[in-house]
Image (tube, rainbow, N blue to C red):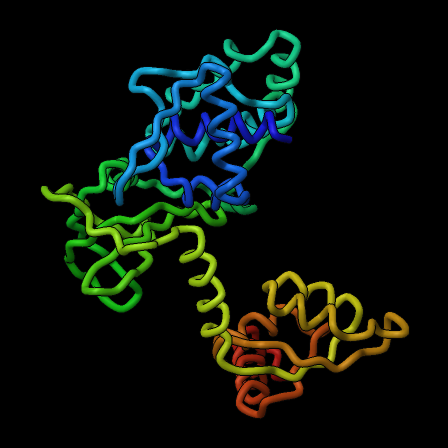
Length: 323
């Protein structure tokens, strides 16, 4: 445990540069006293760790010094190969770099570990694109990625579901969700999310991105998803469903699947159970639920039931089934 912690200190100082004692201790989840003991042990072992005093001080490695160890365990090496998504990396223009990095990592690993690391990419394949969909053309993704990496402002021509506009934004990060790329960026004192496929034009600007203090892309995205899911469901529907209907309902969304899981299953294939599910709008729910009929029956609210009946009448008239 301690040997692993000592190696972690080396890696942190090598990758992040100078770090304060408090910052190092917080990352490693140890006390300041334990950290000082570890630093003493590292210097005694010949690792050139230097301390700078003052408000901007901290610990750092001698300039130019570099450990020859990868610091990876066999399982960690496999995880690195698993994380190298070839498709997304290629879309970002990093396909060759990922391949070269994996080759360098293989060369640095002990020979006995190499086959295990290679086995990951030969036996596990991650496909982020949903069923029955193809990857959308993203002509401006490379420009957006450059803006993110280089921390440069970006001027975009953007098409939202409301309107088309031009704006200058400060890119903060890229997120790949369900096969779609999203750009998180600051602008007008607010952080927004932009679908990269909806960017009609993108041009790098001079200057440096103004990154909000303490911003975490992971935490921001998690909160955004929770907020979106809470806001998108504006109503509730009461239904009766067979066992088959419940199964089909569970495929609509995670929120509906949660509601389905909360009810007891029907006693037989012919019986139905009543349940409530969250819905977005009457129009949206009508289209979704009508596809599941007759295994799913709409009970309420009245506007949803009326919309469903009206849709059925129009279908009957369309196919000439009045008689």
